[in-house]
Amino acid sequence: MAVGETEGWVTPQKILVFLAHPDDPEFFLGGSIARWTGMGHQVDYCLFTRGDKGVNGRIVDPTELGKLREGEQKAAAAILGVHSVQFLNYEDGYLTPDINVRREVVRVIRTLKPDIVVSCDPTNYFYRANRINHPDHRAAGQIVVDAVFPAVSNPLFFPELRKEGLEAHPVKELWLSLPIAADISLDVTSTWNLKFEALKHHKSQITDEEVLRNNLWSRRTPESSDEHPQFLEHFRRIIF
Ligand SMILES: [Zn+2]
Image (cartoon, helix red, strand yellow):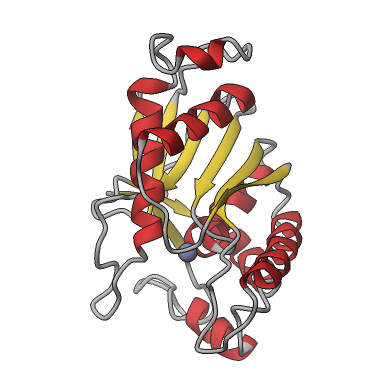
């Protein structure tokens, strides 16, 4: 794994972050998103769901919760300098890879024409010793991977989109967060506090800011000292 490696992008890139729920971009790669916007790259979000089932035991109206979380997501994205946030209207918890949702993803990618697409690793079932990765996360990763190759760049896939003026568009790179096997780790020490500030906006998900702060602090690298902490975010990177 290459720690402290840089992206090597010499011109401003258009980066599309495509994930399942509000708060996924910030939790998975908020430091990297702030790093990229700080370097002058454009970052846009597309989220499959509004996270309308994302509560801990409290029963609330899913539509109300979805609206609330949409607002929280936009506020968090603004902290990180994100250019735009859009939502597809899939129901939280039921995201399933099929040809129709793949077409929707191809439509978004061919519309925004990003250089770089970021999602998460669909093969990651158990991301920590005591955690099962949410099925929507795996589904989102699967759908995006399958859209990026081979569909987005092949005009014979979804020819109906060409009637909408959406031509085939090859992306240059695919980055997967929460990877089983990382091959690049970005140093996000300088933007770690922005990640925390952004996450604080997900108030429906964060019951205690101190717990969040401690959780983020605990993720410093083993080589860190208290005076000089170092934070990394890990990816699998595919350069086409
Ligand atoms: Zn999530």
